[in-house]
Length: 419
Image (cartoon, rainbow, N blue to C red):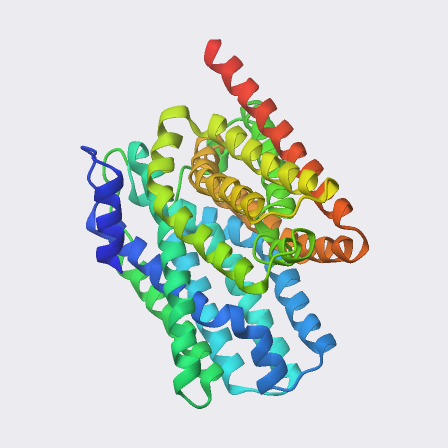
């Protein structure tokens, strides 16, 4: 998988800036954990209901536990990243996720499953805020956008290959779902070891040290407040994008395509899979676009593309025009938006974060996504059951709000550049 990522990099970026072996190792570790996630996470609810014979209410309780704990621990994890460093905190989070998935595979009673989900939530809250500071400490500034794109590509490849492999395993073994959970646990254990092995011992010129940036006291309060204004806009924009975009793709959108556009289930599956492949192919070239136009402009562009996609869905529903061509166009716009969003968001976070606060701000972003994952799909399913037009209106106005935030952020950046 490391070879696939390296090949994709060479194909998409002919650049004089070469990535270091630790960076490639980090990207390979990202692909490994994504492979484990693709193996296990889509089948977790099935595991609870079929293997552990839990009721729907018990399954919902366990998922809510994971979301709430991830939300609460995310901000604390970001603080620890700033105080202790991303390598130790990231490895600790990966280790806790390994422990949580192992515990899930070995127990059947609800109290122990609850403890396992709490451990997973704590692991999420530590692991995700550390990822961007790790890239900052590994990679020179001029190469970071490429690495963010490669990390997203590694995620897509890992999840895709993991999902295919899970299908093969489910056809060929007994105690199948437990095996998927154990393999996922092993992927996080391996990544924890990778992080500890590649953690830099010294700071090289031009790179951020392993404890990213300086202590927060290095920036006086007025300057810090001035910098936190754009960061607040960025967090609000991310929250709206997560609520009304990212968390809807794999949850409500397949159902919406089937119901509002009257597609067959097989057609929906083929379209979703095709767009995933399209996003993987387009990721590196669009990462280069982010480098050229800048992070804030790319964030505004992705919000515009996402808004256009939901307007297309709303218009199709209002006109009762059901066509697979509309569904393809809608998903293509979403795929393009996702490819721009990930590298631009991470680049903007590093660019706008005051010194000493990068970990905490990443923790807020992680908590924002966890909260959006808990609420966004629930609201979406509720509206789909009430009225299809109301569902598409919610997505459209939500993403329009994100577009407004990004437009203001872009305007501020332009004004600051002109002064």
